[in-house]
Image 1 (cartoon, helix red, strand yellow):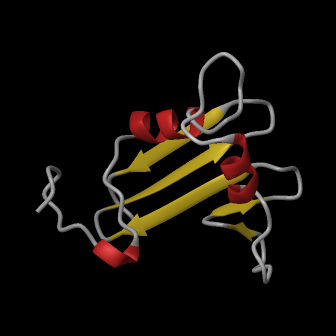
Image 2 (cartoon, rainbow, N blue to C red):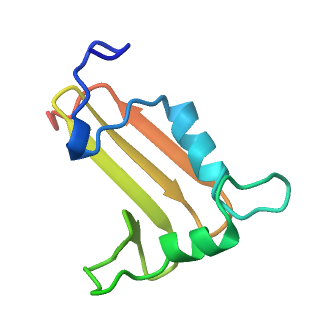
Length: 102
């Protein structure tokens, strides 16, 4: 079991991270010149490009809207998360301790 008391979901793509860690990931791939990115420009270009064949608004694991905002969300029985890189250079990460909409 992970540090937070859950079993990682393995091939289902489970991440264990804090909102601060998710925001750091977004900042580490945002192409801003005030800090280094963890991926090359070429890798970021591929990550943000449309996959072949195109699948809706999905771009290699992210969602990209018509304005160019990248986001990703997820939900498991004990929580849900959302992170977004906005076009105005603001990164957002939110984690809730439940995925129950009630």
